[in-house]
Image (cartoon, rainbow, N blue to C red; front, side, top):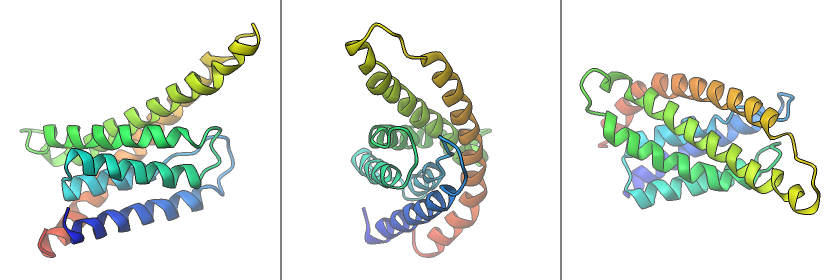
Amino acid sequence: MKSKDIAVVGVLLAVGAVIRFISLAIPGPLTSNLVIAFYCLAIILVSPTFKEALGIGIVAGAICALITHSIFPPGNIISEPVGAVVCLAVWKATKNMKGISKVSAGITTLVATFFSGMTFILTVIALIYTAPNILSKAAPPVGGFLTAGFIIVVTCAIVNAVIAQLLYIPSSKVVMRRGG
């Protein structure tokens, strides 16, 4: 990855981190994860390799785990690399696809956010909700958590898709003008 690409990724992850930090002022147990929109935009703009996309996801996961009021911050360290790799795969599959190439940044971000969010939810269920079953016979209320989490993931995916699509055109022009 060129140093210019590293700078683009770093700036976009920093913007996502600042927005995530500000969003913590919004009360509630779960909040939208706008860092995903910005790492997706970074991946879309610099077209990294698989390993580089995985690295972007790991850094994004660490940022999300550190700046959160989530019930299980380490879940982001698992979910964000998944989202980043899915982002790269969907972007490569859709960027030149006839009929959708103009909205492929939004579609890519929508799918990546959905995969990241569902990975987070399934990680939380697997690690937190199954642990009490080892110690007791009472079953935790997984259905309610899954339903609430699914609604949040879908909402976040739509918001992130809109943000990424709106920012893609001006940011791609800036990156191209700089020799991208």
